[in-house]
Image 1 (tube, rainbow, N blue to C red):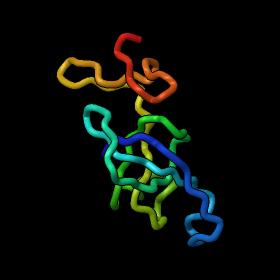
Image 2: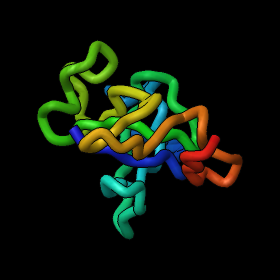
Image 3: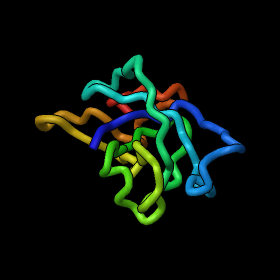
Length: 108
């Protein structure tokens, strides 16, 4: 699994029939220090994520392992919304400590 931040949405009114009913979000992969990559991934949302949230997503055949995506032609799926994470005992992210700009403030 990979970590990313939801930065937008995709609307596609004409699509493969098997993709009907799925919601598509634009995700920018994140480094361990929450730095956004220049790359983007369009991922199916299987957990109700929103713009600005930090998420875990899977790609490739793993993306088709949810009830929402099984047997569907998808290459990336958001599998979880991240509440917090730490690395080597240091808090790197806490959803409740983010300000409205999406920046992590460890003092909050």
